[in-house]
Image 1 (cartoon, rainbow over the protein chains, first blue to last red):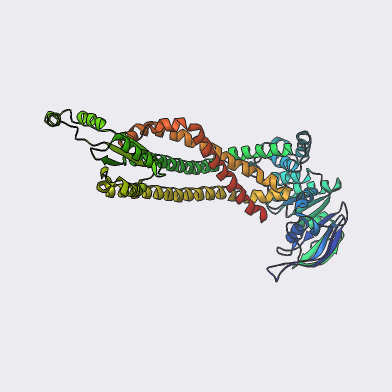
Image 2 (cartoon, rainbow over the protein chains, first blue to last red):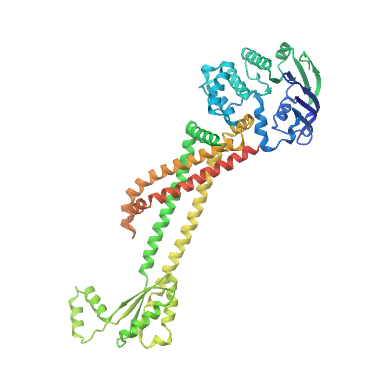
Length: 226
Length: 302
């Protein structure tokens, strides 16, 4: 489903973010990409979201190189991939409901679809009673759940999670991880980038370890060893 | 397509409302811009009226010798009328000159009595000539100095008034050019201030623009609400400006009219209210919309 083929990314000519990264991810897989800060996890996800382009190599999604996506095709491509981030990236002037509905609106979905789907997602993330709250009125865990709700609204095949628990306390952290596992069980490929040893070791899923831009380990039922 | 359009307008309106303080600040700055532009326009209108009034007061008079027949004078008049520079000519016959003289000096019985004692009318017939522009009197005077007219013209008062006319012309030209120059400069400054205020307002939303991109919004879906917000700034600022100008003109108009030779400014403002509103609206909406598009463009490219 996703193939990274000899991906290298350099910034300002000589700063190596990724070097010759090659691995693939199967449909419905739950993969954790781990490594210390600066190992290249976020860069890898940015390349997959087409926020940036690799300096060398190519990324294939469903057999198609995303390098060749036209400028106009990028919004539609991003709608097929859900993404959540450490800093939540919610729209501050929109309520929880509107943040999720906005993702449907940009995709041109009808008002009726929005009115049906958003409450369903809100109940999945257990935030029905917080629907009309603005992000500044929500806790960190609730914000991240809204972000997950927004990422799921298009029923994406892939969900990217870049340090989703970085800003959360342990209780909320496990809330989010459990939610990601549930989403994966429902059939979505999940790519989780984190440096949280405890989470990785408890998950018991595939782990791709990065160090200074290189893949140093790729194991099924892996553990966090750096 | 229509749904997207509707959503863009909805978000533009919602953002305007929810960014209360930012919207108020931006609208205030834009209102100030529109106020400055309106005042500049009004000052130009007033200056032009005053200048036209002054220009209307300039003319030259040609006095004909006493033995010149009316027929000859009218011939000169019709020839003068063929000149491009001439705006209009007023013929004052000997009799009319006498009547005017008597009217003017009715309180001076000695002067009138001495006039009675003369057995003829000593006043000369004249042509009062108004040129289209103040600097054209010299060429009209040159025409009158032609050999053909020398025998019938007694005097042309151009030479006596030459200095005044030229000075007046210089003042008129200077005030007009200076006024336009100053207006353009001020307009440019307030334009730039507004442009930057809107850019700053959007600068605070740069992270939001980035999030919209990540969620998969198309460029127009991101740009649209900001563009609508910019247009609303222009619309609200226009209404605020008119609401401020209306009482200002209402109260200052009598004062301005009392020391400047112009009629009521408030009536002028009221009569042209719609065109004034439309003009400000076009400036405001253009400035708001255009600044927003330029500002968003920067963050869309990042």
